[in-house]
Length: 181
Image (cartoon, rainbow, N blue to C red; front, top):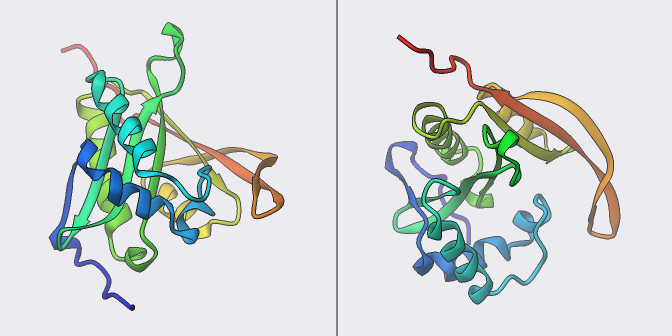
């Protein structure tokens, strides 16, 4: 079934909740989605319910967002601690996925804007890191539009469909870090 692209003015961004587990399992189970991420095929609803509960159990640690259009999940994104070290608490990892039928319709931009607003204005985040498959040109363009810069290529980083593939490491520093008055 072919769907119309999402209308960016009608995209709702909200925090994910455990009741989103079934929609997340279906979304992340799409071949076009898991092939572009470090996810495995056949995710379960129980696995996603547990992940979402864990992300929501420690306020301020993780931010997990869901994008909806017409009551249907069309994407999700998150910011997650880059490590447990006190010396890295200024850094977070970013993850994002957009349903194939909604790609190119503003969903990714809406999710990125929400994540960066949180990071820059509320989360005390100086550095946001991500990895993206080096052949994912659409995602790389999105990240560049939001200020991410390449930091290097990691060769044979992950197994995807029976082949080892490279990823690009990208990061964004806060464009105007908070200052004392």
